[in-house]
Amino acid sequence: MAVAVNKQLNPLENAERQFSEAAALLKLDAGTMELLKRPRRATIQWLPVMMDDGSVRMFQGFRVQHNIARGPAKGGIRFHPDVSLEEVSALASWMTWKCAVADIPFGGGKGGIKVDPRTLSKAELERLTRRYAADLSDLFGPESDVPAPDVNTGEREMAWIADTYSMHERRTELAVVTGKPLEVGGSAGRREATGRGVMICVEEMCKHLGMKLKDATVAVQGFGNVGGVAADLLARECGVKVVAVSDVTGAIYKKDGLDIPAVLAYVAQNKKGVAGFPGATALANASDILELEVDILVPAALENVITSENADRIKARIVAEGANGPTTPDADQMLEARGIHVIPDILCNSGGVTVSYFEWVQNRMGFYWQEAEVNSRLREKMVKAFGDVLKMKASKDKDAKVSLRNAAYMVAIQRVLRVHELRGMYS
Ligand code: NAD
Image (cartoon, rainbow, N blue to C red; front, side):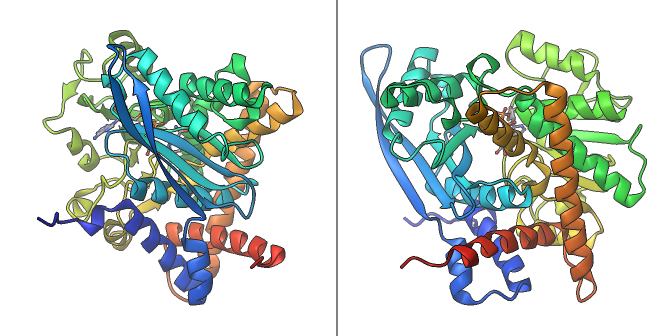
């Protein structure tokens, strides 16, 4: 029996539609559009892993390199039961455009393993991660393809990947992966970088709109590396009131603002999630967090959470996309029509890959910067990228209004295309 696929929720369809809209505004011809749309390489691996009880289990892994014209493929590795080649392909293309908007010398890539990591022991996860890294050691390399963390992977997995690759190369090569622990060549400020970039984008957006950030209300969906840090920095450095946060365990709300450091400590201590945090109200449905009466909404969990089903109930004035692909193209149009300002993912969450680039640079120099230097270089890059996108929007708005997403794509596409033109075509 055929399974109905909701095209609106297919991240690859969405990524291609976002690209095509901007490419059409740039009047690219059909061949150029194809050149920029198709992934350069997509691989599927079946990974055998010896489980703790002696049985063997097969896991499916993926790595997609979307475009490497501007430099090595760059992009995280996701561990999630719903990972698919289509999802990884969408994420890889978003990386191409993200690196170009951020103006860092990388192309786009992404990887993933179809697994629920919570069901594996630490030793099983290590064997799975190392098998994946060993299998892809021909593709990976500081000059060719540099992975990083994504959903359900972090410093620990990146250290395993750096070690596996180094064992195969017979020398220590730390620049093969970013997001590593500090002691293994990680960069100061990397863990916070994506959330910090989200904060900088929100600040820039408020400046642009003439909107006061202090005491503005914020809701954050997803309380991991991106959402947890964004909530914390927005509260501590900008004085906003984070009234609601959520994760897989549920959503919590407090009208006067949650004590985010206390929520972070609670999550770290009970090793589960935000649900049950004392003194806050639980929202009946975790997804209700998206529809709260707040000034700023930060979706920082997974893709396709703002769809045509709920877009007309979003009340925030600004949507800052911490996650990749949280808004479907149909929903995008609805938000745009209602005057809601969406800071697109390829701009809003580019702080992570920007500091990944700094980490790669530091590894190759063998010289490490203080956190203040990393943060100030990050701010400089993010403010420049935000300004470039606003400038593009202003230049196009004269003819017909374009969204910030279209403008960000146009900046990125022009940059990637220029490199293709200069390098020429080898065929
Ligand atoms: P993470 O694993 O650290 O955290 C994900 C969070 O989302 C967790 O709190 C999880 O409980 C929550 N979550 C998952 N499903 C949810 C649901 N249905 N409802 C509410 N919460 C849910 O992952 P992360 O690194 O923070 O990544 C989050 C998003 O940001 C992803 O889209 C990722 O691709 C994107 N991103 C991450 C980085 C990075 O540097 N880590 C950089 C750019 C973009």
